[in-house]
Image (tube, rainbow, N blue to C red; front, side, top):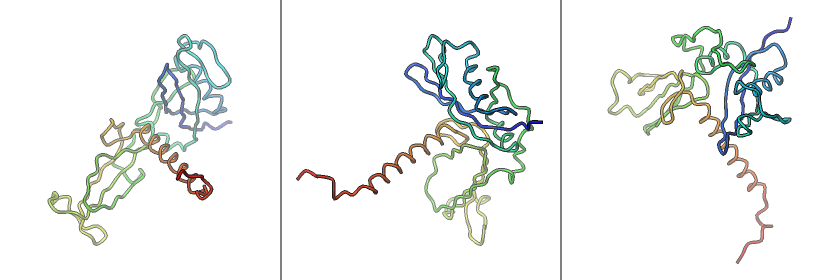
Length: 208
């Protein structure tokens, strides 16, 4: 008997001059590459106009959809992600996976990030997955007395929040597109910096 496995997948859509990334969940006991391809083929719920080796054309060739990548995850994380993501099936329909709701009271099951700081302003916190975020601020002046606590022998102002819902731009919450865009941008900057570091500047002719 083949065991069902769980995945996070990504599709790329080009619609006219605009491009979109779609993140979703899927589970299958068959070949995940084939499943991703079928999801792309059924994405608009109607027969595609044409397809090439990478993707599918829809709406009079105005829309192009192709499978991008996927990653296997364990069932527990899959169920946690189901709180804010949807499962795509190869029928083109979107349905909520049959999984238990996350008990946010059991915060120890979520990833936890502890941020130590000394004053300063944090505009918002955004993550790619559900998590608990704890701020320990050594600047306690003017803070709510109920939130001033002694942690590890230090008096700090404590802010404790759980990111469990999709966040709008500029607000706390889960925002995969924003997080991945930041990571991609930083990776490009690091590549550029590495290229300059590896270049012998003495051999580059400069204008006097």
